[in-house]
Image (tube, rainbow, N blue to C red):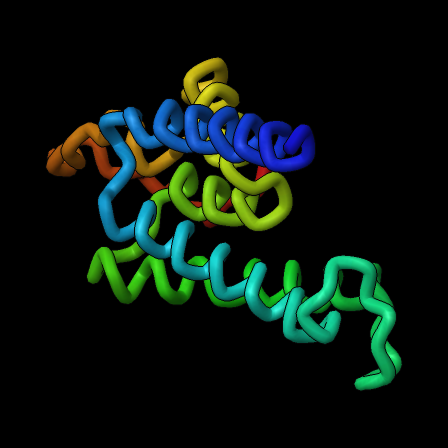
Length: 153
């Protein structure tokens, strides 16, 4: 009974962090769906590589628990931005891409940590910088090329 209560508490806290990170106004619903979908697929792949047990005492391959974790994390890192781009139908911002990467490494709170880091350092996000329109070049502003003198002194 204590085991189930502890498990329920951990899931509850993880979901609380997930919902807190999802409150960011900049996060597209497609990015959230990509994070949850690829994360669930990575978790299922980990357990499939482990023979559907947590401890991985099976004879189905050479991967141990660490190898399975590395392989599924690498798969998550590769697929998350691809799926996120397809679901949003646009190029991901730096914040969204790094949030997807962080969710692969630190589930549930990775994107929240990335959001906090980007809020503290807005210069990290060049696509949100104010872009000034280009000035028209006036004829008098063109660079003047100095000609070499024909007479040497």
